[in-house]
Image 1: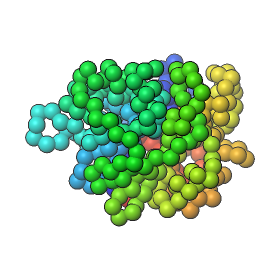
Image 2: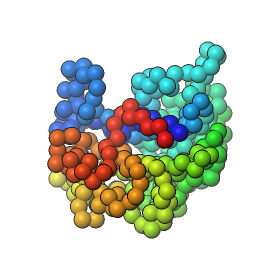
Image 3: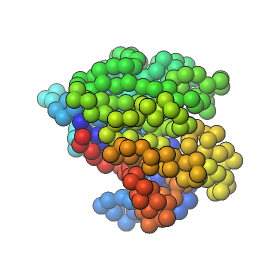
Image 4: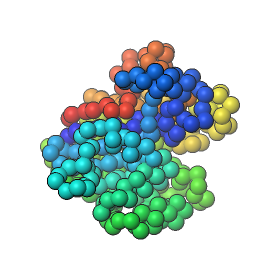
Amino acid sequence: MEVLVLGSGAGGGIPQWNCLCPNCVRARLEIKERKESFIFRRTQSSIAVRETGEKWVLLNASIDLPAQISRESELSPPGVEIRSSPFSAVILTDAQIDHASGLLSLREGKEIELVCTQQTWDVLSDSYPLIRVLSSFLKIKKNLFPIKIGSLFFNAINLRSSAPPYVQREPRPGDVIALSIEDESGKKIVYCPALPEINPDLEDFVQDSLCFFVDGTFWSENELSLWNIKDKKASQMGHVAVGGENGSLRWLSTLKIPRKIYIHINNTNPMIDPDSAQAKAVLSSGVEIAYDGMKLLL
């Protein structure tokens, strides 16, 4: 199984268009100096997976998708037709703007297989009607979990969290999920870019996986208020913070999983800086920090 990290940042990416936090400032400097490789710069989170020789399956579609595709040679249009897609399907873990808006960038295609929960499908058909708009351009084939695509099996577990901020209703099962991807030999990875809570069901879900991509949005519970950006806490926004006594890093260090990788990292998170104490704490705990263009072969 091949895994390609298209984007590792949270909503807005790094640099975010209106942000002057230290990480965004340094990301702009990397761009200005035309660095060959980026340490701070990150596009919004998405990964692609495939069994070698097959088409890719896209997990979440950010608004940065066109740039992400053009950056990776593996995502060049396949085949001999003048136009073709490198993707056999798109899978969504929720209906958040930074995870779904990139669907519109696929409108030049002929057909798309879209896999998500019924709740996500309903939200994207009504409150944020991407599906209705996209269906004016191409055929959309809807599928739910569990599903086999090519040689890979995809399944989901519900995470108790709220719907996107633009949906004015109480939370429902299926608003946010974690996703497992398993090949025919039993090798499994888990993708969880939003971690609203740690519970026994999720612990069971990630057991026996070779790699666990997990929410690294915020380092601390009060991160945004420390920067006078927003009064909401990380937990109120559907994210377990990385650091602290009840943070995800302490939990991850107890899991016997070969590779544990933080993804969906906000621009305010100090662990983006490899020289920071926070980054060193993550790495010393046996956990990795995703970056754009990261590749895994399992």
